[in-house]
Length: 228
Image (cartoon, rainbow, N blue to C red; front, side, top):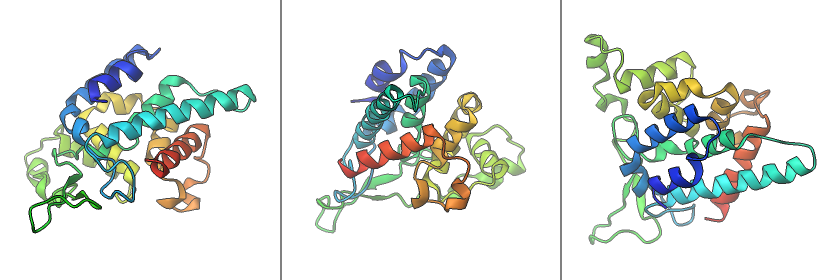
């Protein structure tokens, strides 16, 4: 699957045409990086190959919709398809690249020149390295609408900790598509931000935010990551 196929298969049928257009535009901006992005660095983790992130996303969509359908039949859950697909697509989107265009992962080339079989990727040393984003220059010259300053503004406004992987995705969305960010509901933002569940945050930070959308995203993400 590539980005165009992701859009055609899962986004083009959105009932909310404004959301469809905003999400399509955003995905096209990062398409080159998304097409080649793995979902993790180690074979022992999940989807550690070029295109692995897209495969992971498609699995999360399928699993969320399957869980929702099952729960809906029992009268316990009835989430919108648009909302589920939106958070599934965006929850790990930071793995494609950061706001400066740096991919999260680069090939792990060994001293003999070959790529490691067990750990084919490593974290890019330039990824989310704020010092390399010319941030100070943007602030000093009052460039208020650069991708860097838009991303930083979201972090500061929401008192977000960048260690939480979902926060990195939201930074990228806020930086590249303010309109898409503005269209996200509080529930959708929370689902993306806290999709790692208690693995990435304390139970007190999650308290009151674990609605059906977040729970289904977290469950689908875990199931895909354990079987990829």
